[in-house]
Amino acid sequence: MTAMKNNLTVSHADMQELPQILRIYECARGFMKKSGNESQWKDSFPPESLLIEDISAGQLYVLKDLRDGVIHGVFAFIVGKEPTYERIEQGGWISGTAYGTLHRVAGDGTVHGIFDAIVAFCEERINHLRVDTHEDNRIMQHLISKNGFQRCGIIYVEDGSPRIAYEKTAEAEGKVGRNNMNTLTEKDKELIVQAQKAIRSNYDEVSYNHTVGAAVRCGSGKVYTGVNVYSLHGACGEQVAIGTAITQGEREFEAIVAVRGREGEEIIPPCGNCRQMLFDYMPECEVILAVNGQRKKVRAKELLPFAYSVEG
Image (cartoon, rainbow, N blue to C red; front, top):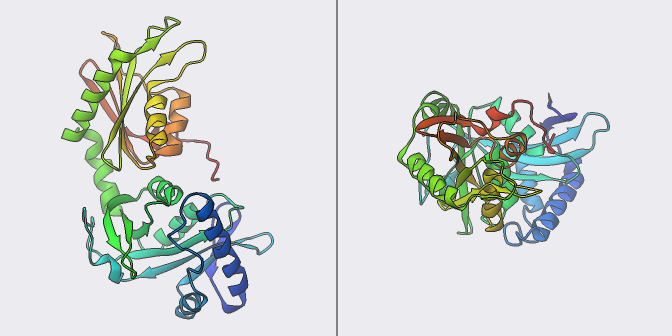
């Protein structure tokens, strides 16, 4: 048994806990349907027979509350090759080293931070993880990206239906920390140009004289822009860009640029509200700040080291 945050512990599931486990999966299926994801698990997945196999193999885990022993989450964790991951399209895996796969992740919806705790537990066992999810499971996509996984492509599960595949490796995280934060890629430079173009639409009714153009690049490859909109109640360019992307159905973000438009200004980081929004939606993503040829690149979560999170 391993203690985690939020008074949660992770331990192997046993047969006596099967009724509670089935209840959690029932809750998860109901939530999926309500949130627009009706086809991923349908009415019967995972079947009881598969869960019994998982328990017998020692690869099904439960998350319990330390205080009362109530189970709030379930997941399977399997170290070794996943057959459905041998074929990947529209991309490729980051690393070919040994990995562990997260499967059948579910929570009862009453406790925040379930997936965070699962990832932390699994990383203690192996620092190379893979996971996949359905294209309609927007919430899971957000949680996966929030925990530092990178989208790698499309895989196909046993029934032939597609899933978005993700991977998290210590090697990839090290490369981002050492190299990518110090250099701008061609995609970064293109994003800066988009943000610079957006500045022309800046709206400042109260003469704050603070012009910002923002551009966010999403996992889909699309770019959405925004500008400062200042009246009695204003919104920053970063917030406008992210909000526009979200209204178009985007839930995965790769990078965001914020360009200041006035001559002679120094680089100024996003305001507090923007930092919280960046942390909420894209904590692992790159934030590029630019003005007058100056460039600074940081990870979003580094802008708010002691961030508030509703997930605990």
